Every structure is written in structure tokens, then in C-alpha cells.
Picture 1: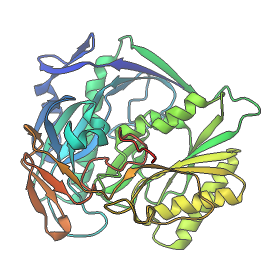
Picture 2: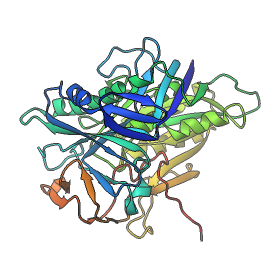
Picture 3: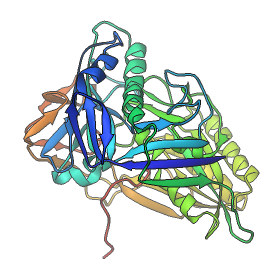
Length: 430
């Protein structure tokens, strides 16, 4: 399997009468795009705004981020989502570098608690919150959605999830027939004898409505670990459906631009042999399920003849147990392990950093913290609405989106504690 990824660098995005790309300037027919969004009767209203890096702007109610793409041949980007299922990871795909489609939608507060409650989210383009998220560096095409009242949660989830994909496909069509600025080839061929075989353990969060991941549009909730080709992930086989934990979610844009997969490819045949991905979910509700998952993950790594594995995970709380148990079993089978994760540590960073640990798992890379409070300064422009709703467990506390916002931790800040290392923050040793 060989994937040719063509990249088009976009320098500017503007609304005009025609959707096209010329010399790095991406023009969008706003009315045409709005008509596509409003084909879904789930939405009563929609708007589209462009937010660029460096603007003193804030985006609220952020749901997902998707990269505009076009794929040559029979398959289409994000195959299976509102489209026929075709195998991804092969052939030629074109992508827009520097552009993200953000969906913004305020869900009705239908319940006050539970793991799967929809939480509001926020991201700032500048200020103290800017370096925390990569989307302060992208030109964001924000689709602002208003939901039809009285529909069930399943319909809301489905429509909001697929509309970002539909918009990304529409925008990506302008790449057809054009010559990309660069092309990168991804293939697992070229392995060298004598180099260690390394697999990637990729845990996603998938435990029901508003808190799921989708593989070729199949909800991952009840799936056991599977071996997949890394090209499938880069090509859009995994789509996000997690509206409950904004700070630790893996948006669809993260899946298709996974920096760890790219890094493993860069080292493939040089310092290591990249042998594949084990995709699995966490947060089984009983220890038997967690142990079953861990054993199957380790067995999959053995089937790939892995000498070592690197792991990332998504979620919080007991979803972390599957990751730790999987790495523990790998170590017991002689497979070296390394983990990338956010940490807790409390507001001062001196409390226990991990929810759960195993002594065998001792190579851990910290990617930031969930717990420290953050103050977001006032902004000149707000996109998505007028108020940010936090603390849904208390019935919702509404904060003026344009004014200073003080958050006691980073739960509502979009991708603030992501496990893939997209933050631009770093840490110094003293």
C-alpha cells in the first residue's frame, strides 16, 4: 500500500463569487457552501466565517476540525461518512495545508450529568490560549450551525459530525487537476535488516453517543483491537465523534495529520522499521474487558513482530487503564514501550500526574497538563455565539464570550491537553 500525499499551501482565504484556488489564495463561494450545509433539515440556520492567525478573535462551541481534501480515483476523502465505503490509504490524496474546517454548534442541555454529556468549548487565536492549540495557526473556515429544536440527540450527533466532512470535501474539490506544492510518499516498504521493528498503539475514545470514534463510519464502541495500515489513518479512515471532552479529544484533523505517524515514517528504514498500527478503544467498564483488550493489543504487536511500541491515548479517567495494561503486557512479552500522554498534577503541578500507572511502564513523555487554571483575555471578535456555557452538571454557567474568561482548569479549552503533542508549549528543566 502506497499513499501519495500532495500538499497545497494556502496563504489566504476569502469569500468571492466562485470557489477556487489560485496562487495560494483560496476563494469560497459562501452562498453555495451555505446551501450545501442547509440541505440537512437538522439545521435551521447556518453561517460561515473566516478566522485567520493573529486575529484578536475567539471561536466558541467548537465541535470538530477537518482538513479540506480531494482524492483521485474511486475513493473519496473520509470514505464511509455519508458516502460509499472504499479502502483508503492507497493512491493519491490532495490536502490543503494551513486550512481547517471548524464546526461550531451549541447543543441543547438535555441532561445535567453523565459521561456522555456534550460540553462547550473555546479556542483563542492569540493571547495566553493561542499557543495551546494548533488551530491558532490555521486559517479557520468556521461553520456556525443552529439546530432544529425537538429532535433527538442521535440525529444531532449524526448531522453535526458529517457536515464538517461534507464541507471539507466540497472545498477540497478545487484541488482536482492542480499541481501540488509538494508530494510525500507513505509506504511501509524499505524496511532494513538489523533495525528494531516499532509499532504504534493508537487508543481512541469510543463509549457511546457524543463520545465515540468512527472507523470507516463504524462506531468503534464494541470493537476489539485491530491492526490497520497507518496510511488508512492519514487518509481519513478515523473520524472524530467526541463532543464531551474538548481538551483531550482527537479531532478528525489530528487523525489525518497525526505527527507520530509522520515521525515514524520519517525514521522508517533509517533508525527503525515502522511495522503498523494497532487501533483500539479504552474505557471498558469492567476489569475483565480491560485485561482482554490489553492482551489482544500485545498479541497484535507480536503479530507485527514488534520489538518496541509507542502509544498514545484519548480520553480521561479509567480509559487510561487499558493503555497502561497494554504496555505492561507488552513489556512482559519483551516488547519495549514508550507512552505519550498529558498529565494532571493539580493546579500547581505537584500532585500525582497520572490517573493510574504500572511500574513496568517507565518511559513516558509528558505533553502538557489538564489541571492548571487559565485566564483568557478579552477579544475584539467572537465567532460562534455570544456566551460560553461551562459546568453543564450545574445546569450551565454562561460567560460572556467577548470578555475575560477564567477557567479553573482546561477542560473546556479545545485540544488543550491533547495526547498527540500538537501544543506549541514546552517545558524547561531546572
